[in-house]
Length: 301
Ligand SMILES: [Fe+2]
Image (tube, rainbow, N blue to C red):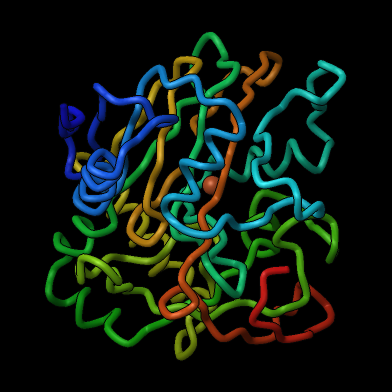
């Protein structure tokens, strides 16, 4: 039996059921991959994957991007709960990263090699809020007026996690965590052509800033206007999590954000990130003033 793929009432997203992600045969995988390219966000309710099963599922899409210092660790917790069970305080580095995730972004655009896809599974969910919301940058590009399309054609932006965290008052030193590196800020076109579907999509979000050829105010205004326009219905879907749900999105054409919740409650997600293809997701970098040193590299490690 092929899996059931039910499109969500938005320009992106589908709910996929009638399969076990931990035991996909070749035909089922093909159906999942096809649905991923068509819908860009897939929701798999109630899969309850183990960590190894989640890693294996992510691995079907490509190499795993290593986010932790230990290369053996291929899944990470996105959580406000510490290993001892206590809840993080508002002054902690990782808490500020979580608050940063509430802004629209695409994963690892601030690394030399941006991410292909991201997998999240819910372990512990708060009583309200904490949804993951996705926005369709293919449909957003399609909906732009001709003037805006002409204006952004040929423009690129720098991407920096120092920049996006500084915008919420979190000033970070190199080496403080993943993304705070001295490899420079990648320069990426505002319009990305999807390597599989060929569809153009806006490639923007909170890490994007400093468009060459525009002054700082103009650049900020354009980028924030684009996000405002792009991340609206019918181009958005917010997933209200239940423990055991798995969601994957295509970072090449989707922006996402975490919705706020009461941070006194625990929210524990397990995350695996699929690395981009160097042929299409690797970008040259320029000096990032906030990083201090500049040691160009084409590696994320
Ligand atoms: Fe993210």
